[in-house]
Length: 246
Image (cartoon, rainbow, N blue to C red; front, side, top):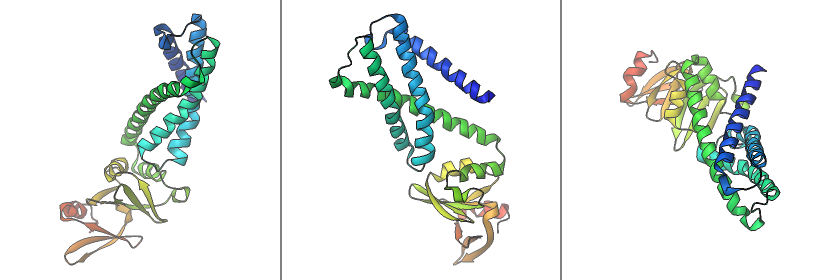
């Protein structure tokens, strides 16, 4: 409850400061009383802030959570621009500003550009925050957080390994496999060194995911608990042996 109140107060504070700045600098050169112009910007930005509480989870965590970040950012900024543009047009009509329909596409483009910049900024800040939280997270919490990227049936599964396939990662668990859009380097950073190690340029294996090891034509392979085999290149053989996986 206290956290929700703090978040609300923070949002209202940011909206108030931005509205005051837009009013002071006379953005769009709108006329009318100061109180009306301030109200216009305050309500417009509040609409954008409230819309973000629905748009961000809708795009980033539900319907497009496996899409490329650029696609998610583009979709979120467009959805945010719609209610903001409508709100602005209503106020423009009230203060006799140019709210004619022929100018609506141009107005939407301006609003979308601002929403795009703010969405990119929010994405960067959120990613930095999550990486900072991961630095302090326990190893098992890192795995649990990583598995949140997968469908519900994988929550609580044992992570065995991840392997790179083009722009995707194949996540190997004791409940099956799933493809997600992510770089191997980002996955390893998120999972941390305590949970496993890289065995090949395209493979990361969890310590708990290895059932056995074997050699084939001189090449070392780690047998996962699922039966799949993860290759071990010469570059990583010493690390694999030091970890006791052979």
